[in-house]
Image (cartoon, rainbow, N blue to C red; front, side, top):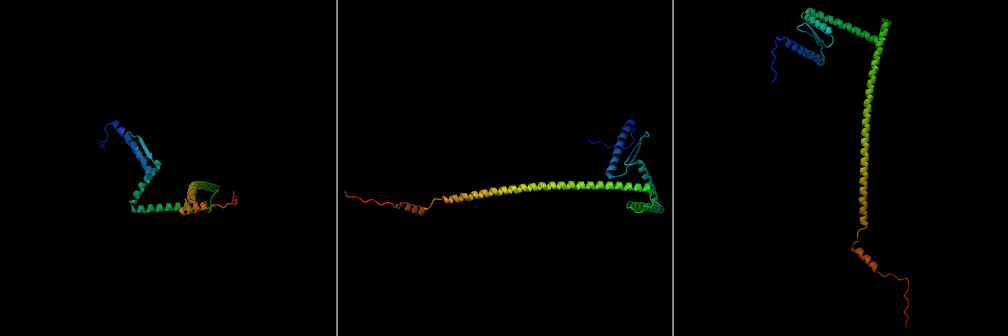
Length: 228
């Protein structure tokens, strides 16, 4: 059987209430952490127990979360008034213009332009920033080159393995061709031998017998017979 539905109301027993508070508090903090990690959200959690004990959680800084909350509440209240809304957007535009001007000035200084208004300490700070940036760029370039070298090495190894496989196939095909050539040559030689040793027909046998039956010529004359 499944668990029955819990009635949401104040727990009268103090021990049960404290146990439930501890469990629910841990679960709530766990859910807040998961929400901050999974959804990249800025989460701030403040809990006061019945005895006045404070429990809090923040994905960044609790003070920054509270300041952001207060600022957002003020902005929401100002947006309800059209006049306040216009002033709000004017302030936002002014802040963005200042940030843009600062970024443009910083970019020009990094490019070595408009350095006349800087003192020695500011120039040293700018030089240090450039050196740090250069080190970061060099490290990134070395990482990319190392990665490319590793990829090229892996590709070279793969190509080498493929060449070895192709070489083995070529050798195997060559060996098969040699075996086939040997078989074909042996078959041809055997056929030629059989034709040379074939039994002659009747006409050939008759000619051979006639040649054998002819008398041989004597190299001396028969002596004459004497009368007795």
